[in-house]
Picture (cartoon, rainbow, N blue to C red):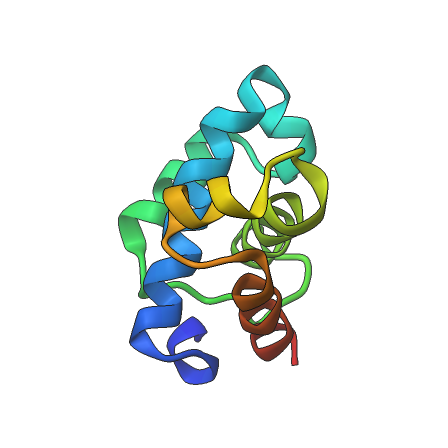
Length: 101
């Protein structure tokens, strides 16, 4: 489903956000991302063939919370986001808005 709302490049960026956010959150990742490490790993293994159509699904929760953490939660400069992800926070905000529709 994620492929239906985002370009291939945007889908790749969302996956990268998830991969980068998890270690940045450390032991708090489970609580702040809302899914277990096992579930997160399974979602990443299935990427991009995931179903994020239900707001309560692990896929939707993981995408939502990972983007939110990178944009608003983790104290990280726009410069560091650019280095880690390859785009700035404004671009991630645009991707989030597009995905959330």
